[in-house]
Length: 255
Image: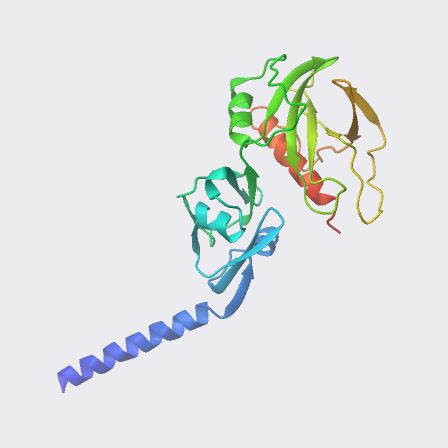
């Protein structure tokens, strides 16, 4: 009788565990970006939805590797790409191919993949303006060809910068002015060549001014930090500014 009672208790425990798991998995699909922006911790679900650049992907497990992220987005071979994880309210984190990402981690929002070694014909590998060691290490790990030059002011030039869909170009050259007093003085705006327009015909505000840089007319995007996101010396740098530039290009299509 004791054995039967023990077996019954074990079966009951297993049934309760299965019921608890079923309750945990009550959500069919969890959109990680929506959870992150709402400040919610993603619950366990049958599948998890996330973006890699503009590609929407779905994964059935809460754990995924960097390699699997790139494969889901059809970015092959994965070895040709640098991958970063965007965390809501935090600094993007570099992800190696074999790194494991917990999709249930608070703030997991989306992924950004950049093809290694992309370049344009204008690239000359110039280093005519000094950069800090911190900025150099970031630029070398960012995955795009870059130069520094002096044309009235010191400039960082980044080639073949990928854009979200909706513009008349898929890639542009981006110039960032190194302001006097940087890094104590904040970086501001970005300059784009060739000029961008929206394919839907809607105007892009505050981009009417042109700036001659290195013999080419760059389109100035007058985009600035807000009072809620001020430049903080010691925390902000070229790296955080470039991440803002990425967001500025994305924000043009957010309604």
